[in-house]
Structure formats: C-alpha cells, structure tokens
Length: 627
Image (tube, rainbow, N blue to C red):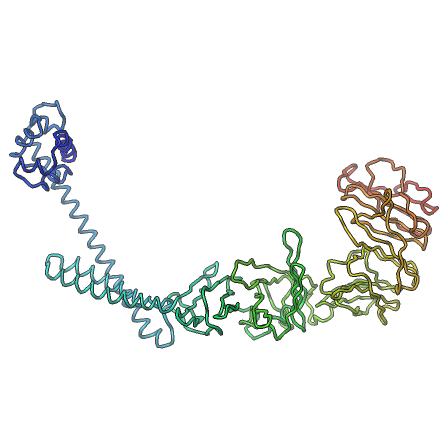
C-alpha cells in the first residue's frame, strides 16, 4: 500500500465530510498531529484504527485500503498495513541517513571555515597589522569574527551537544550575546569610515580608498593584497559628498570629488610605468601634436611643448603652463586652471618611450579626460607628428623640397639644408593641401594663424630671409601660385555653403607684399562663385584656369585670358561623354595638356582617362594618342 496515496485519499474523504483534522482525530480519540502525519504519508494508522477510520469517513474498509471509492476488492489488510509501515520505515531511514550526511558535511565545512577564518585573523593581527596594513573594509575584522562564531556554533550544536538541551541553550545564548556585540562593532566601524573599492577592467589592479564619514578625510591605499591594503597618501582636501572613480587604463584611475567649499578636486591613482623604471616628466614625453576625431568630424587637439600644454576643443583654446601641471606617478598628469583641475592626461599602455629622449615613440596614444562630477567620456588622442627613430626630436628628417611640422615648428628641406619657417604651425597640418603652399628655389610660401590673425610668410632665397603679410583671418587659402618672383595668384574662400563657395582670386605684383582682387569667381547669372573643391592655375599673367567640381561626379574647367577678369567654360568635344571630370592643365614646351577622367561615378573601360592638348593657349584641343 502506498502511504502517500492513502494519505491523499483520507484527506479527500475528510474534506467531503467537511471535517477538520482535529474533528476527525477527536472521533478516533487521537491527536490532530496523528491525522496530519497520515495525510502527509509520514505514518500509517494502526490496523485496529482502520475500521473506525473507514466508518467515520463513510467508506468500506476495502475501499479505504484500496484508496479508491467503489473498489471493494478484498485485500489482506494485515499484509497491506505491514507493507505500508515497512515502506514508511524505509523512507524514514533514508531521510535520517541523508540528514546525518548533511550534518557531517556541515560540520566538516564549518571546521574548515573556522580554521581558515582563525588563520586569516592571525595573519592580520600578527603579520599585516604590524607592518601597517589594514583590512580593505574596516568592519571586516568583525565580519571574520562573526564567521568564526557561526562555524564554531554549528560544530558544537551539530556535533556534540544536540542531545543535551541545557547545553544547547547555553551555547545558543552565548552565541547570540557574542554575535550582538560583534555586529554592533561592525556597524560602528562601518559608519565611522566608508570604503571605496573598485577594480580595473582586467582585475589586474585594485583601488582602495577610505573616507572618514564625519570629517571627510580620505586616504589612498597602496600595496593592495586582495583583503589587505596599506595607507599611502591622504587627499589634499577633505571630501564632501560622493567620490567619482574612472579607470582610464588598467593601471590609471581618475578620482574626482568636491571639497567643503564645493570646489572640484582630483587625485589620480597610478600603478604602472612606461619607461625603464627611472623618473621622467610625463609632459615632456608628450611633446608634439595630438588629435582625436569625433564621428561628426569635430576634432580635439592637444599641443605639448616646452612652454606647456594647449588643448583646443569645441572651438575654445586653453593653454596650461608647466606650473599648472601636476604629475601623478610617471604615467598621468592633471591640468589645473587657478588650482581647479580641468583635465587628466594618461599615457596609455601602448606608449613606449625612446630610451634616449624619453619621448613617446610613434604609435603610442594618450587619453584625455575632462574632470567633472558628471559623466564624461575619455578621448584617445594620436600623435600626428612624424617621429622616426631619431635621437634629436627638435629637427626631423625629410625628403628634399618637402616640409614637416614638429612641436609646432615647420621645417622645409631644400637640397641638403633644413630651414625653420617663422610662425606657429601647431594647428596647421590639416589646413595644407597640395596647392596652397610653395617650396622651390625661387619661392617658398606658407601661411599660419596666430590668435585672430592670419599671416602669409614667404622667402625668395631658400629660407635665408623671410617676409610676412597679414591676411583676413576668416578666409581660407585654397591655391597659391607664383609665375615669376613678383607676380603671383591666390584663391581664397570667405564662405562655404554645401558645394558652393564664395571668394576671390587675388593677384600680387610685388612678390606677395600686397594683394588685389583679380576675380570674384565663375559667373552664374548675376552671381559669382566657386565650388568647394575649386583649384586654380595660371600659365602667365593673363592665361589661367579654374576647376569647378561637383561632388566628385564631374568637374568643369574654366579658362581666363585676361588675368581672371572673365572666365569661360572649356568644352572639349570628347570621344565619349563619360569623360566629364577635367583636371587642371599642365604646360610643357609651349603645349597645354589636360587630363579628363570619369569621376567617382564612372567605370567605363576600367575607369580610364583621356588626355587632350592645345598648341594655341586653349583655343583648340586635340586628343593625344597613346604611344
């Protein structure tokens, strides 16, 4: 007989009779606990109780034993009861064995936990504490003590005293008193000082801070050993309110807070090095021009030189002198404006220092992080200076008749001589194209911005002497060309809207000292304009050309024969209309050559080009046959 099935059956019958367990028990002169155990299948009625039980439940004894109403099949009641009791006893025996096993495992685990907890506390009291170490959380000694108490309590209660009620009560009473005292100390320690604990992304480093909740005094802890740490440095200012932490690299963590006066403060925890272990100035390792581009193309620029660090961001420029820079370790610095931190700069893990100059080698990056209690996003900046494996970073090598900018200085190389061009070129790299500067033996021309002014700087003697002319700051130089030492042309834009640009072609006859307007652009009805990608080229003081591209799909070519006063479109009867992208002509041995391509939208014949030539200054054009 199944005791579980039997129990469910009598429970069902009892409920049909609308009797409680207590009411059924009273009719049988038993306790309601006995009835409860029957219904749960934990015990079985004595054989003498079956007849009265069946009678009170309104069924035949055969129905009761068969656990089914209407089933009056004869059953050996005595045998069925005996089997049910044996089954219950076996179930009890299995349960007791399982409980004994659980108790033994609990005792063994408790003993192990007890030993480990006592050992941990001994390590702290007799080794770590003597050398100035503390638990990373002040309430942890009490928590460890509580673990010791709980494990000892379980061992005593389960292993030795579970049969002695008096001793059990004493053990429980002692455990309760000691736990209350211990928890009180833990709460007190926790309320006295707040622990701030955070890990780097790869868990290689752990930041531990402890702040006095009452005074705001905060300490940074070093030599962290998982649960233990050693106080290293107290913050310069008491902390008021929350502390913001941000891991910039796996070994640099920014810590931002406010002092009692509401002023922003910064501390940087560093755990690594980028050199050979010797001390060096972080700002010196960064000498050069750094840049970060956002998705919309707006860039953040950083310039580091011997004068300090300049940051150009969101249209604003801020220079921090060396006295405004505070170094943390050898891998991070903080930039201050009147004692208020503005930026943290971190040397990323890919930084490798040159063994001779201590300057970051090519490929290394830095992280710029704006100091704020609000959420700010770190920016990774790359160096846009050329850095070869040179020992002298003040002057860089390059090919002849090329330029290079290093630490805000522009250098030009002629044959074998490198010459420094006057001016400040830290932000000019992205401003130069192939057409708006000149390097030659006859003429060298560059331009640069200085605060609210733009200057054209030029030399006629390969950099021995230089002249300077001021230009409008709001105009961009697109093309510049000198056809003689004195006569030159310059294309400048003053406004750009979509694909159209307004501006002028200027002419000089005194070598670049003064410029006058030669043309205001290509006439379109009553207006004059250029395209944003327009370039110009003059063959002599009268004959010149201007391109007017359209989003890379086609490019028109215009010619002037009167120095720019009038332009007309060059229309060559090409062999196929797919050739619609005109380049500026070249001039060789009295012959003009113009190459015409297909633009970005052309793939005819592999996207090739054709070349036409003119021997009469552009009046007539002929197809140049391939050799």
